[in-house]
Image (cartoon, rainbow over the protein chains, first blue to last red):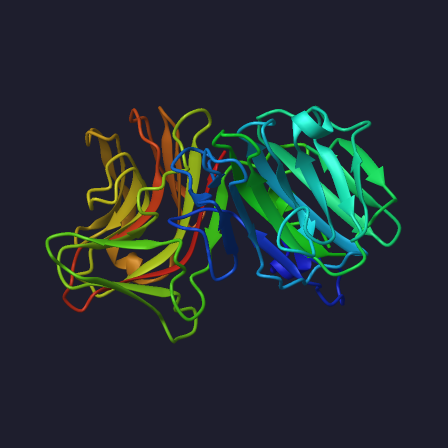
Length: 209
Length: 205
């Protein structure tokens, strides 16, 4: 038996790189860690349901948003990092839902890499979106069909490619429009209709490789 | 190095992880994921213990105070149920405390499983449904041993529950459970008593 968590995660003699784990459990979101930014009264609250994690919601107002990040503390490398999130989308249409790593304050702002859903605009799949500051790429071919079930989303960035893996099996890769700068965790949702949209996230882990 | 990620320490990536949390009770103050509740007009307080392996100290001015998730209940008896691990000790021979999972933070620990170290002979293990029906049985471990740190692990499914202390199975019960749950640590007594908590982990299985 290994005594330390450190030794479970790092080769002997290796200096650990930045890593964080969030279980989204308890009374309230840890706002010492997370910065919550609502637009048009979007909300977040711990879900009082089995395996509910954090519930993020828009209001029933077009352009309402709810998103969390690290308040622009960008500790994760665009050329060597991993993000793992367990989440479900309350709907896959009527707006955007995403989790990933970003340089800006939300998806669509700045650079990054996301597992992205917006069926009405980008097909009925969990897209792999990357942004390098001037262009965006949404990989759809080979991606898993989007749904409202809970899935494990894993994004990995290296110096030459990015990848999105769903539930440990299907993996898609992109080598274009990769982020060119440091990144922070990114979870968010918006609505482009008069529909109250939601997502639940119950786990997130990011680490540099 | 055994695992690339904390996720994979307990689940392969091909398994969608269920709700799972842990708390080391370390730092300047108790994390805001926890809430304190009080009864009978008492005042409970928490403070990090400034001592080696001190963890968190829970105190109360009377009868009784608890830390819990403010009735956010992500853990279930249904299916294969859930498990909880507490590393705890009481300070003061007259201290009466409990740790476990419960539906309510109302001080009665109904709708869940708990160990209770009071002033009786032995530590007890209880499994109660929301109405308070169920079982209480001795773990066979002297209550005086609760003055030292021990690991209390409990499992809770709809028709079977277990308790282990320091890795040794002490109880298996078959109460009929009906409630979603949150972790709860409860101190009943005020006079020169404390409940110390060093670790809590809870997860759906």
